[in-house]
Image 1 (cartoon, one colour):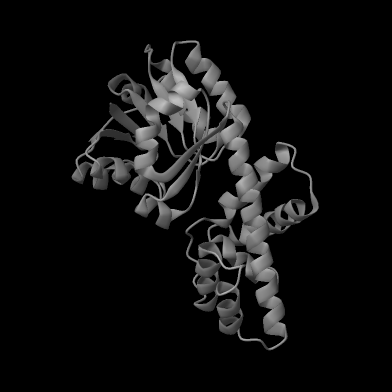
Image 2 (tube, rainbow, N blue to C red; image 1 turned 45 degrees about the vertical axis):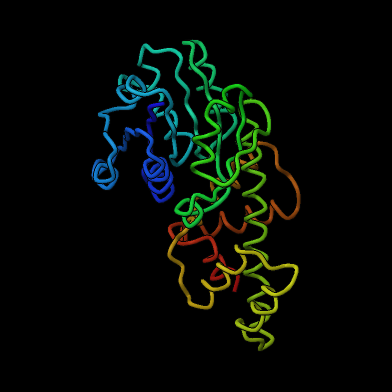
Length: 280
């Protein structure tokens, strides 16, 4: 299978590199052309547009920022839907709304193509290590066809339902992420007010049933005051907003959305754990 890849940001670059390392034929497209250069050095070819890309390959993967970016890739003179092709599969690994997935899936299917929404759980380190968890929505037979590729990118791929259900599941996961991130920041601030060393608090948490890789990584970031983004606060805020728009309405998730929304203008480009600075 020839593979097309659209989106070479912090996540898309290592994910597409995993396919190249596995010996797959990969053609890439990115709006910012200099981001294509490292992939070319690793053996990838390039396409001038999404239209040209889908004409050249069997499967197109997307890893881009939001609903608008998805619509930009699909529509227009040089978009995916401008290509007169059939029998292709588009796998959208972006965290977007179920509505945009269902919209572009319907347009693809009208031309005889298939769509899978397949957002991932994990951040840059997991993308680099190919240990992401892929959360898919779509037809079972389409999922089975691309499963070997998904399992090259991640450690596990799960089909959770029809088109859009993968997106909704990812929004649930990231709402939990927002709750956990705010909770960690709040207890660190509380412990500091009570003259408990953050290093001691984190050692206790990390050696208890509450410990997790995420808690350890973000606790270390606070200790080192390193707020360089593995996952930006603005992206998490976008995901919390999408969950709200999809109907999420419960106290903890609502509180996380309110907190992160208020911090987005100031801290949007920093890592999610920078929320600790707004909670002091």
